[in-house]
View 1 (cartoon, rainbow, N blue to C red):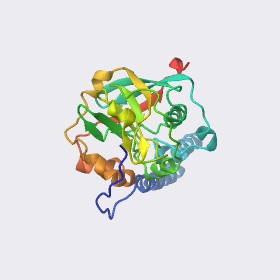
View 2 (view 1 turned 45 degrees about the vertical axis):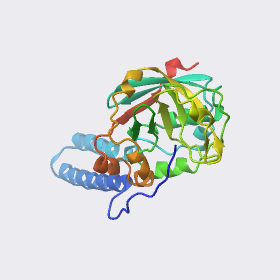
View 3 (view 1 turned 135 degrees about the vertical axis):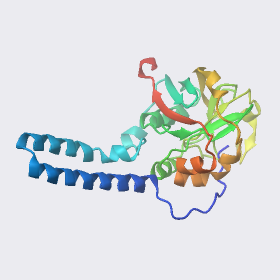
View 4 (view 1 turned 45 degrees about the horizontal axis):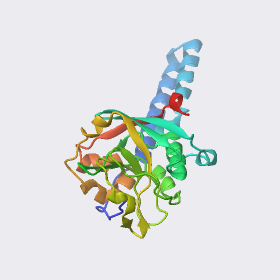
Length: 262
């Protein structure tokens, strides 16, 4: 259920990083001019306050470039609790999932790591096929997508069924799971055993325990079409989707519910 079909040829666009850098240097120049003005007309106390504000403006550059971030090795080694919960805040409302590590230990660890790094923030719910699945897991930053695409997790046996409301990793062939997930919108029992690209079945790792009604509200008018252009989405991010599929819904924020961790 993870497809890499060539998208349109793309030329003359700025990446989200380039746009952020452009914005940063514009801000930098403006702040320099502001400081020059203060040197001329303000007293020492006001000047020191202004310098402090200036440093606060330029210091968190890396955090301003991305809502997501590339993790260090310690994050990649993080082990998920036996059971944990996460809240997904979408443009149609909120839902909560519960992840059971026994169902898919490696898959649960990876999801835990992704939530720690806020990977799913501002993710498009780009494949909404009513009565089948909802798929997501391409972030709005090319570098972050490339990083995770290189960190594949091994396959695991299918221990639970792909029942309505459960979540599984999308994949291509053998050992190809990375970050994309899908929500089952019905009992997709065929996905437990189907032989897809040389591998049997899709492994569930979580279920929606609250807010499932939100899933029915997600815009599904495009069906599978956006999923045909995953290469373009991975490079251009949400700007591509907003240009060609403007009605899609988004995950505004996905966060671990620490108080619910067992």
